[in-house]
Amino acid sequence: MQWISDNAQAINAIAAVLTLLVWLFYAQLLYNGYIRQRRARVIINRGQGKNIESLCLVSNMSAEAIFIQHIVVRIETSQEPLLLDVSDYQQSNDDGQTEYRSHQGPLSSGGYLHIGTFKALIERVAEAHGIKLDGHRPSAELSFKAIELRVIAIYGSEDRPVGARRRFLLNDDGDACSITPAQIDTQRLASRRNRRLVKQWMRNLE
Image (cartoon, rainbow, N blue to C red):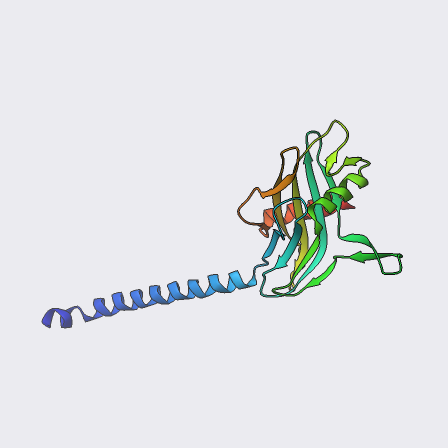
Protein backbone atom coordinates (compact mmCIF):
# COMPACT_ATOMS: atom_id res chain seq x y z
CA MET A 1 0.00 0.00 0.00
CA GLN A 2 2.85 2.35 0.76
CA TRP A 3 4.33 1.67 -2.69
CA ILE A 4 1.00 2.44 -4.32
CA SER A 5 0.70 5.64 -2.33
CA ASP A 6 4.24 6.69 -3.26
CA ASN A 7 3.64 5.99 -6.96
CA ALA A 8 0.03 7.16 -7.24
CA GLN A 9 0.76 9.81 -9.86
CA ALA A 10 2.62 7.38 -12.11
CA ILE A 11 -0.11 4.75 -11.73
CA ASN A 12 -2.82 7.30 -12.57
CA ALA A 13 -0.88 8.42 -15.64
CA ILE A 14 -0.48 4.84 -16.85
CA ALA A 15 -4.19 4.13 -16.22
CA ALA A 16 -5.14 7.28 -18.15
CA VAL A 17 -2.96 6.22 -21.11
CA LEU A 18 -4.45 2.70 -21.09
CA THR A 19 -7.99 4.11 -20.94
CA LEU A 20 -7.20 6.40 -23.88
CA LEU A 21 -5.86 3.47 -25.88
CA VAL A 22 -9.02 1.45 -25.19
CA TRP A 23 -11.22 4.37 -26.33
CA LEU A 24 -9.11 4.82 -29.44
CA PHE A 25 -9.47 1.10 -30.20
CA TYR A 26 -13.27 1.23 -29.93
CA ALA A 27 -13.39 4.48 -31.89
CA GLN A 28 -11.42 2.81 -34.68
CA LEU A 29 -13.85 -0.12 -34.69
CA LEU A 30 -16.82 2.25 -34.93
CA TYR A 31 -15.15 4.25 -37.70
CA ASN A 32 -14.33 1.11 -39.70
CA GLY A 33 -17.93 -0.07 -39.35
CA TYR A 34 -19.18 3.32 -40.54
CA ILE A 35 -16.83 3.28 -43.52
CA ARG A 36 -17.97 -0.23 -44.48
CA GLN A 37 -21.57 0.93 -44.34
CA ARG A 38 -20.80 3.91 -46.56
CA ARG A 39 -19.02 1.86 -49.21
CA ALA A 40 -20.75 1.00 -52.45
CA ARG A 41 -21.12 -2.76 -52.82
CA VAL A 42 -22.23 -4.11 -56.19
CA ILE A 43 -22.38 -7.85 -56.87
CA ILE A 44 -22.22 -9.31 -60.39
CA ASN A 45 -23.25 -12.95 -60.58
CA ARG A 46 -24.93 -15.61 -62.66
CA GLY A 47 -28.38 -17.02 -61.93
CA GLN A 48 -30.57 -19.93 -63.00
CA GLY A 49 -27.80 -22.24 -64.03
CA LYS A 50 -24.12 -22.36 -64.84
CA ASN A 51 -24.25 -22.50 -68.62
CA ILE A 52 -24.41 -19.84 -71.27
CA GLU A 53 -28.19 -19.60 -70.91
CA SER A 54 -27.91 -18.47 -67.26
CA LEU A 55 -28.89 -14.94 -66.31
CA CYS A 56 -26.40 -12.18 -65.59
CA LEU A 57 -27.46 -10.51 -62.33
CA VAL A 58 -26.41 -7.14 -60.89
CA SER A 59 -27.26 -6.64 -57.20
CA ASN A 60 -26.86 -3.57 -55.00
CA MET A 61 -25.73 -4.62 -51.52
CA SER A 62 -24.85 -1.05 -50.47
CA ALA A 63 -26.52 0.69 -47.54
CA GLU A 64 -28.03 3.23 -49.97
CA ALA A 65 -29.30 3.25 -53.53
CA ILE A 66 -26.91 3.51 -56.47
CA PHE A 67 -27.50 5.13 -59.84
CA ILE A 68 -26.34 2.90 -62.67
CA GLN A 69 -24.77 4.87 -65.50
CA HIS A 70 -23.22 2.19 -67.68
CA ILE A 71 -23.08 -1.59 -67.94
CA VAL A 72 -20.27 -2.68 -70.22
CA VAL A 73 -19.59 -6.14 -71.61
CA ARG A 74 -16.02 -7.01 -72.58
CA ILE A 75 -15.38 -10.27 -74.42
CA GLU A 76 -11.85 -11.63 -74.51
CA THR A 77 -11.13 -13.34 -77.81
CA SER A 78 -8.22 -15.08 -79.49
CA GLN A 79 -7.57 -11.69 -81.10
CA GLU A 80 -8.47 -8.26 -79.73
CA PRO A 81 -11.14 -7.76 -77.03
CA LEU A 82 -14.67 -6.66 -77.94
CA LEU A 83 -16.52 -4.05 -75.86
CA LEU A 84 -20.11 -2.82 -75.83
CA ASP A 85 -22.22 -0.66 -73.52
CA VAL A 86 -25.37 -2.71 -72.96
CA SER A 87 -27.16 -0.21 -70.71
CA ASP A 88 -29.74 0.48 -73.42
CA TYR A 89 -31.54 -2.29 -75.27
CA GLN A 90 -34.49 -3.04 -77.53
CA GLN A 91 -37.48 -5.16 -76.58
CA SER A 92 -40.55 -6.23 -78.52
CA ASN A 93 -43.90 -5.58 -76.86
CA ASP A 94 -47.11 -7.62 -77.16
CA ASP A 95 -48.04 -5.78 -80.36
CA GLY A 96 -44.77 -6.76 -82.02
CA GLN A 97 -43.44 -3.22 -81.88
CA THR A 98 -39.89 -2.50 -80.77
CA GLU A 99 -39.45 -0.54 -77.58
CA TYR A 100 -36.25 1.02 -76.35
CA ARG A 101 -35.46 0.28 -72.71
CA SER A 102 -32.58 1.15 -70.43
CA HIS A 103 -30.89 -0.30 -67.39
CA GLN A 104 -29.72 3.18 -66.45
CA GLY A 105 -31.29 4.58 -63.32
CA PRO A 106 -31.49 4.05 -59.57
CA LEU A 107 -31.17 0.61 -58.01
CA SER A 108 -32.36 0.49 -54.41
CA SER A 109 -30.43 -1.04 -51.53
CA GLY A 110 -30.91 -4.80 -51.64
CA GLY A 111 -32.33 -4.59 -55.16
CA TYR A 112 -31.16 -6.46 -58.24
CA LEU A 113 -31.72 -6.57 -61.97
CA HIS A 114 -30.90 -9.07 -64.66
CA ILE A 115 -29.47 -7.77 -67.88
CA GLY A 116 -30.24 -10.86 -69.95
CA THR A 117 -28.57 -14.21 -70.44
CA PHE A 118 -24.86 -14.52 -71.08
CA LYS A 119 -25.71 -15.88 -74.51
CA ALA A 120 -27.83 -12.83 -75.33
CA LEU A 121 -25.03 -10.52 -74.18
CA ILE A 122 -22.51 -12.33 -76.37
CA GLU A 123 -24.89 -12.09 -79.33
CA ARG A 124 -25.32 -8.33 -78.80
CA VAL A 125 -21.57 -7.74 -78.66
CA ALA A 126 -20.97 -9.90 -81.74
CA GLU A 127 -23.68 -8.12 -83.71
CA ALA A 128 -22.31 -4.70 -82.77
CA HIS A 129 -18.88 -5.72 -84.08
CA GLY A 130 -20.16 -7.39 -87.25
CA ILE A 131 -19.27 -10.92 -86.15
CA LYS A 132 -21.51 -13.76 -87.32
CA LEU A 133 -22.25 -16.52 -84.84
CA ASP A 134 -22.97 -20.19 -85.23
CA GLY A 135 -25.00 -20.66 -82.07
CA HIS A 136 -22.84 -18.97 -79.46
CA ARG A 137 -19.59 -19.50 -81.36
CA PRO A 138 -18.09 -17.06 -83.86
CA SER A 139 -18.08 -18.44 -87.38
CA ALA A 140 -14.89 -16.58 -88.32
CA GLU A 141 -11.36 -17.64 -87.34
CA LEU A 142 -11.98 -16.40 -83.87
CA SER A 143 -12.74 -17.88 -80.48
CA PHE A 144 -14.24 -16.41 -77.33
CA LYS A 145 -12.24 -16.98 -74.14
CA ALA A 146 -13.95 -15.01 -71.37
CA ILE A 147 -16.59 -12.38 -70.71
CA GLU A 148 -16.19 -9.51 -68.26
CA LEU A 149 -19.07 -7.43 -66.88
CA ARG A 150 -18.39 -3.86 -65.78
CA VAL A 151 -20.80 -1.65 -63.85
CA ILE A 152 -20.28 2.12 -63.54
CA ALA A 153 -22.46 3.83 -60.95
CA ILE A 154 -22.87 6.85 -58.67
CA TYR A 155 -23.30 6.08 -54.98
CA GLY A 156 -25.16 8.35 -52.56
CA SER A 157 -24.03 11.96 -52.59
CA GLU A 158 -20.61 11.17 -54.09
CA ASP A 159 -19.69 13.01 -57.27
CA ARG A 160 -17.13 10.55 -58.56
CA PRO A 161 -18.28 7.28 -60.13
CA VAL A 162 -17.53 3.91 -58.58
CA GLY A 163 -17.10 0.72 -60.51
CA ALA A 164 -17.42 -3.03 -60.20
CA ARG A 165 -16.31 -5.80 -62.49
CA ARG A 166 -16.27 -9.57 -62.65
CA ARG A 167 -14.79 -11.92 -65.20
CA PHE A 168 -16.28 -15.27 -66.27
CA LEU A 169 -14.48 -17.96 -68.25
CA LEU A 170 -16.23 -19.44 -71.27
CA ASN A 171 -15.57 -23.19 -71.14
CA ASP A 172 -16.68 -24.59 -74.49
CA ASP A 173 -16.38 -28.38 -74.77
CA GLY A 174 -17.76 -28.49 -78.31
CA ASP A 175 -21.30 -29.40 -77.31
CA ALA A 176 -22.10 -26.83 -74.63
CA CYS A 177 -20.55 -23.80 -73.01
CA SER A 178 -20.39 -23.30 -69.24
CA ILE A 179 -19.82 -20.05 -67.38
CA THR A 180 -17.22 -20.18 -64.60
CA PRO A 181 -16.36 -17.14 -62.42
CA ALA A 182 -12.67 -16.32 -62.70
CA GLN A 183 -12.75 -14.58 -59.30
CA ILE A 184 -14.43 -15.61 -56.07
CA ASP A 185 -16.15 -12.24 -55.72
CA THR A 186 -16.89 -9.07 -57.63
CA GLN A 187 -14.00 -6.60 -57.68
CA ARG A 188 -15.01 -3.25 -56.17
CA LEU A 189 -13.35 -0.21 -57.76
CA ALA A 190 -13.70 2.66 -55.31
CA SER A 191 -10.17 3.73 -54.39
CA ARG A 192 -8.71 6.90 -55.87
CA ARG A 193 -6.59 4.94 -58.33
CA ASN A 194 -9.46 2.66 -59.34
CA ARG A 195 -11.83 5.60 -59.81
CA ARG A 196 -9.39 7.01 -62.36
CA LEU A 197 -9.67 3.68 -64.17
CA VAL A 198 -13.48 3.92 -64.07
CA LYS A 199 -13.31 7.45 -65.52
CA GLN A 200 -11.09 6.08 -68.30
CA TRP A 201 -13.77 3.47 -69.03
CA MET A 202 -16.32 6.27 -69.35
CA ARG A 203 -14.09 8.27 -71.70
CA ASN A 204 -13.65 5.17 -73.88
CA LEU A 205 -17.44 4.97 -74.24
CA GLU A 206 -17.77 8.51 -75.60
